Image: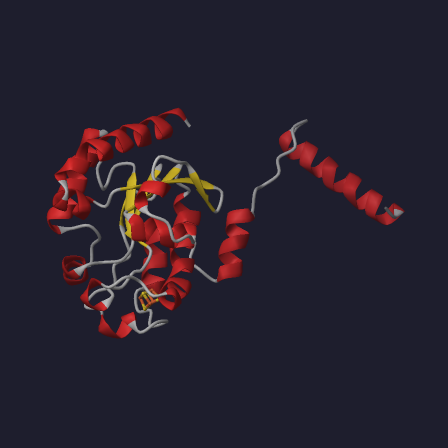
Length: 224
Ligand code: SF4
């Protein structure tokens, strides 16, 4: 290091010492840097305003409402489904209708709700026609929004609801059975896959298995 740089560094450290004493603080600017690099807003509400007119894929032309997600922006638990369905498209909110009510009951059973320590959203923010599976191009265009939501919320755990959400997030083509019961990794955040509440309505025999998963989910959040 040159003498000039040495002197500049010493001056800087002396100034810091005057302000903070013997302790040196380094600010973690990674989140801010990521926001600046992506061009995305640095708060959840302004991010929704920023992207809710999106037409990056064809679903922007067929949707009734953009479905950003709902919940606690400091949530430790983030639930992610595949895409809005018919009711979600009409109401602009994820997981409404019978499946949504069942999800609310499950969350209550682990002392949470969609506004308390939980954020709920989907991989796609617009409804695919006739509830078909998301296309790879739609996931490619929309997934940066989900990643930024995760970046802002910083959950302790992500739960993918259903096989399609699980395989979309993990980039694998596996059955729900083979993804379930394991802690995966989604951009350095633990992720587990469990049943979609609509599947539990169709197959009530799976409810005890889902309840085991949600007890596990609670213990992961509360011990990490
Ligand atoms: S699905 Fe996502 S990428 Fe496509 S239009 Fe809607 S918000 Fe934009």
